[in-house]
Length: 171
Image (tube, rainbow, N blue to C red):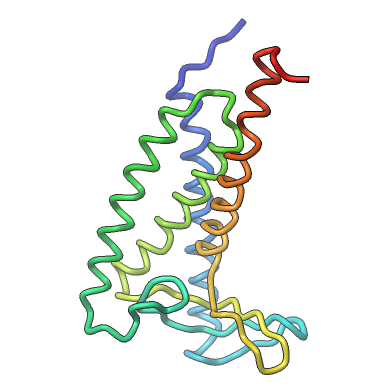
C-alpha cells in the first residue's frame, strides 16, 4: 500500500487554491478588457456583467475611507492566508470537505489580495439583480470565499458524525 505524507495531501488543496486564483485573475482580466467602468452587459434577466472597483471590504464596507483600508485589508488577507495554510497542512487526510473549503477560501483571499496590491481596489463585475434591486457586485474570488465558508460550516456540523462512522462508533 502506498502511503501519502501529510505534505503531499496538503499540496492537493494548495493546487485547488492556485486554480481559484488563476480563474479569478483571468475573469477579472476579461472584465477589465471587455467593459468600461460601470458599463453593464446583460447576460440573463437577473445577471449582468458590470465592471466596478471596490476599494473596501465585502459589500464595499470601508470604501469611503482615505486609503488606509487598502493596507489594512491586505495585511489581514496575508495573515489569514498564513493561518489557513497552516490549518491545511495540519488537516487529517480524511478531512476532504474541510480541505476543499479552506482551499476555496485561501484561493479567493489571494485573488482579491493580488488586486488590492496591484490596483488599490478589487475588481468586481458579477451583478445579480431583480428589477431595480441589485446584490452588491462581486467576483469569482468572493464566490470561492463564500462557498468555502458554507462548506466549512457544514463540515463542522457533519464532521463529528462522519468521524463516528469511520471509528466504528456510528450507525
